Length: 118
Length: 109
Image (cartoon, rainbow over all chains, first blue to last red; front, side):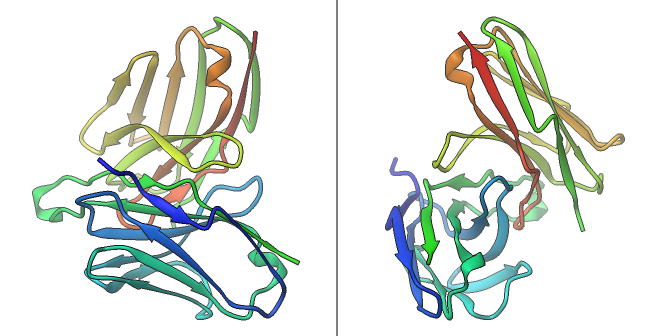
């Protein structure tokens, strides 16, 4: 079973640039979420994708956008980069189940992309 | 909005000691409670997931309990080892996970 993989592992950008981060979900998982983790903090939810549609969004501005592809892989795009965007960006996948069934699957995380803004 | 707090922020113990990490949350209407481990510069490794209908989960030397009425969860680590040194994060949520800021554990050989 292949786990969640993210690329690149590290990235350095300058203010105002744009960046695309990539995530391949774990085999069999149809839901992908993105999180931002600043140094010394817990991860903060950016958004989630299910069946190629955004399925919930955290308190992040529109310059944070995403995509999910038919194979369930995903991209996170950030425009007009700011210094505060420096963080570890984590992707998580899970197999979404019908909440009527009363269970909730755990999310499985990748190793993240370390983004540094100069 | 759900708020998750973890105490203590950092903990140092000698090898072999048993220890307890604490997690509290403000909204008791939760789907589940999950504990993760994070090594420096790395992603999150899931340790234990407790569904809302459960009271505890065990895996090896780890035991996590959940008390929804009081808004608390604890992670118990038995016979700690230097390899247990890491940051431990708890979180709750369905689609949107709410995380605490973690407890940084150092086990001294």
